[in-house]
Length: 197
Image 1 (tube, rainbow, N blue to C red):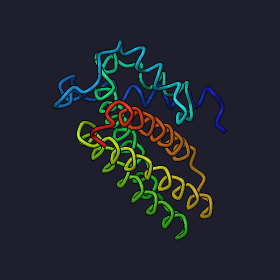
Image 2: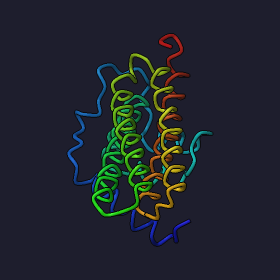
Image 3: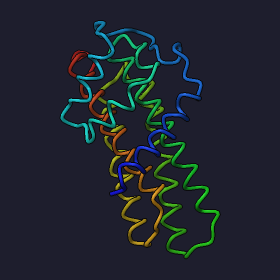
Image 4: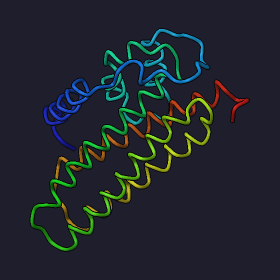
């Protein structure tokens, strides 16, 4: 495991990228509000204390942005989590693409290409789930859940090819955290909207 200072640095860089991105408030408001209004701090606290959450501290830190403060319900929080997950996947995909350009063994290149495909899948899944949260949280829950095995297989490929890249390992770890957050929020939405599932 990386020292806390490295993790903090990666998290600060990661969160800085998101604060510079253009996630306007209008982009996170769904078509229909299905949940009761709860203060966002309580929504985040409830989510980050959920059973599926792999790293509570990461969850709280990732969801301590101005965009999260503006959310009014679980659906809006879910939409924002999916957007953050997709943005994290895009940032990590860029790192994979950067590393692929460097010389390496054929095994390493195969592993990196495998991971590129896994991250493309993760991006599409997070974006797709974001649009399904209101209409079909159950399908969204499944779509988020299947990202996890893709990232786990990516990690296995990297290990088998003996690829040593701390930035990739950090990206994979963060992706797992976003998957757990996405799974938890879609599970919550399923419980809040049982008639729609």
